[in-house]
Length: 154
Image (tube, rainbow, N blue to C red; front, side, top):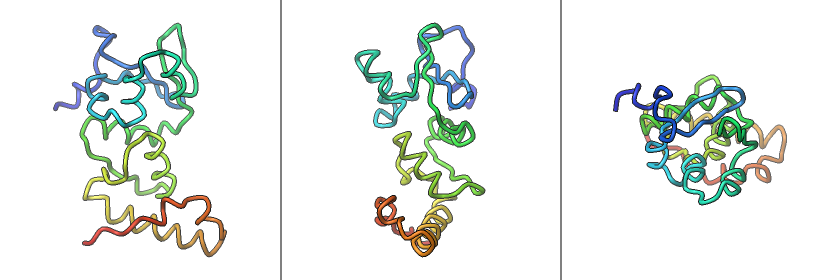
């Protein structure tokens, strides 16, 4: 797939979902989102009613038919890249735990992290978890899903 196919001009509005992620406005191809029906945006498209769709977002602009999410636009660029390529790349200079929670919010498993990023991501995640356990002592209660992680073998 050519990268330009993911984002399109305004001619075929019905084929796109308008989203606003923390001020970042994008039109995303519905056909690509439907390839990931268990993700938040895929679920948004599968909803039968507008009310059900609105429950999956933070706000809805009726005038522009735009769904608003109060999330990081910086991290969402990586989510958009995942939709277009099918590969999730972890952000090196962002807390691995924050990235994991962000992908969880969007309904994308960290198993989708591309092999080029997987080892470092999981290593950083485990280090942050261990450091947090020692310093804060509450990570086991706050992030129980992280305790199930195992580092991939190199």
